[in-house]
Length: 493
Image (cartoon, rainbow, N blue to C red; front, top):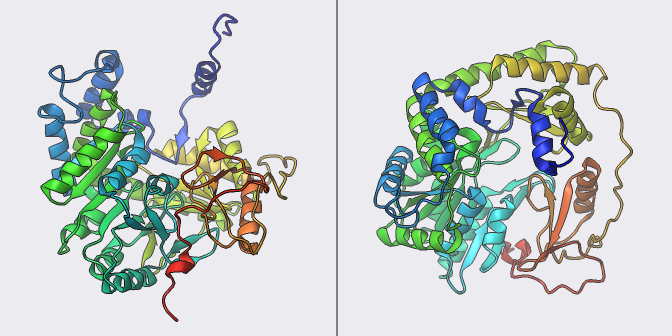
């Protein structure tokens, strides 16, 4: 019942939303699914610690009460050691501010005056912003403006040339898993890249694949497994967004280190500089539980989820109304598709369709361009598949969302002139991967990609490197950032 004295709009909205019952979540592991899917023993621990007793542990514990967050010696230290051993790292640090913060900590630990970083052209904005204090060079890019990917062999040649010239890059940043389900084949790419410049430190963002470390068919292709088999001369840091694929609370993140004691100490000090001094003990607890759950049940849950994915794909292909939506999974020498992801082509109204599925069917999916991205995980059930199929069948029969008024797709606020160089990051969100970086040549393909993102209703952010977030106008006088245009590092003719 609405109480006019209870003026809390967000709380009221969420209370109303949750009355609709289970959300059929095909994006990341939802917390209720952890309780449904876990064994009775694990469910007991989860419910006790993060349900009935949540108010008892959600406090500003520190020092002798539980453990020191920044210099732990007790149960938190033990939990982090067990997690490092499970993933194959020399050290693991828990984080409660999301992988955005873990990425910042990783790069901060490697930063020094004059450092140069070669950064994945598909990197998430958190990595770009964290690298702003350094000279940033994007990797050579292949693919389209809307669907770029790293040209791995050209990147290896660039690394090798710089190393041969006696000016190797200090850091290489790789985005190994993407919002769209695409993943870098690290077992092929990482050995080539490390061999090209052995003294270059490596940061790998594996946000979407933490659970892969516990799957026998996938574990040896993860960053830590591949890197641990290489003759490393520089540290390798890997970040995981634990809540996306494991049984952890939102904002739970792992930062793993392969390196020396001094490398580990630099990460610890960087964490002290950046992480909140009020960490969430429930999130820390969930990171410990998530590791224990994955060790015991990860392989079994993966097998069950693969079966569900196969079933869903069969249902989609056998239904005439949905058969043409299914996008065949294709890879190449250096990229593949996550084995638990299905992509469905629905056209330029993908954002409207996503919103309609949630509003009318309580089904949550994500989008990538003109496609819906359906992520299967251990929290998905047959009931969820039926709800998704119902919505997609109605969509295929023409009973989907009504046509809304066309969103404006002409010039809005600021857009570089075709043939000029962008003075800012231009970032559609989601997914938070820039269409253009400062210094990048703005082409007709960029303009068309931006128009499509606007037509889909994406939030568009314009940010000058090292400056505040803002909506720029064409009259702004913006100083070019320390982001080096990719053309500046092209191979010699």
